[in-house]
Length: 401
Image 1: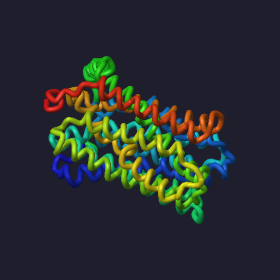
Image 2 (image 1 turned 60 degrees about the vertical axis):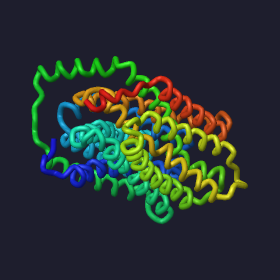
Image 3 (image 1 turned 45 degrees about the vertical axis):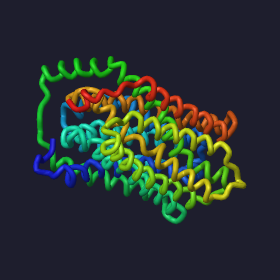
């Protein structure tokens, strides 16, 4: 819990957004600086992809416990723990000199980030009215592409700045945010009765068939999103012959359109779609799949501006769905279960984030290169959109209650 006097549209939303910013800077910097890190540590594409897979393995293991913690410990304590864990992972990566410790470092970052989405989503549901929730969720989720933009800047600057400096900066920022949340904690305890109630609530979440369909679609969406984030820099360098600064800036600008898209699509669903968010998500991800299919035709003969425009468009779709999806997920069950519902969705999302990049890397290394990898990604994202369209049922009465 935090100070009830904080204005939700100023103090609260800023703090929720900033924890996403600092959390994203750490692990995304690893991806934007991947060509330099790959050369420094003598890695292949599959090993680079495994960094993101380790991050998502930690999210998988921590997702459901994190959702329960958000419901029971409150927002501030959960985000304090998250910030300090993410800082520890960034420090570890800054100090590595070989592959295995690097994997352990990204795993530690993932353990911290596992707490971020359930706790921040719980904050939005606690502090904002239903008619404003998607917009608030979009604003705080904007912290993800904002952090990605900073990480892209590090990717561009790495040609004259040691890549380890970026991780030290990320660690410092995370510690600062953690200390701010620590100051806002109102302590509470958990008794045996609450623990039993938690287990009952967790069972009701995990046996909700409608939510499970949404979670299954989330696997495919995040597999596509994280493959795009992980390999865009390498793809532009290897296939299009782009420079490292240009490739990193494409990632950065896609994060900008992703940030704008998260707010736009969330606001659109609140204001113009009467809170019916399902159709908006389906439209966003169907468009993203179509844009991914265009990537399959890319070649060195393409003008770099065309690829940059495609990256921007994918940012506004592939990187822009999360706020709406989290809102749908949190509103699918009663408010007291919001943290656990988001935790279950994070578990599913993390499966996609874990396996998507490493499978993409395996396809690139052993089964046909980037064209085959982008094709598989487009098919997967489209399948997820169809599952939401024809399998998930949106219940307005549950949302408003």
